[in-house]
Length: 141
Image: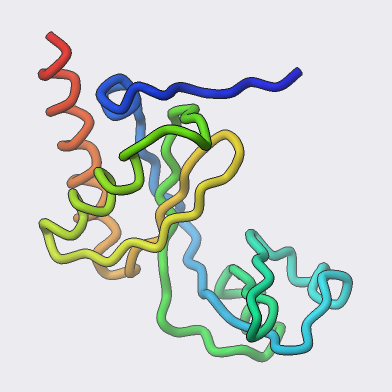
């Protein structure tokens, strides 16, 4: 069964719940990488680019793989099921973080969006997204 997720931006923002991972992650690239060779490092995410295989690894697994462990990011997961066709969600999230000077690396998965933010600003990022959701809820009232 396929579930499409929500499309209404105001409703998505109002109903989203953000949670911050305890674990830190890094983005790295393996120019000649194969998914099978990287499986032992339990990648959180993979994406093929022209330059190679981009991999999101926990800090611990990045160290085991022998790759750089900086810069570090924390993952904020959004408990709202948005459609991959929803318009404006990524822009609204990015703007809320940009307004407080925080970079956002967004990964849109099938059920949820995940935002990787600099480790040292993770709590500030979580607060900004919670405020965005509160404002959207107020707008629905």
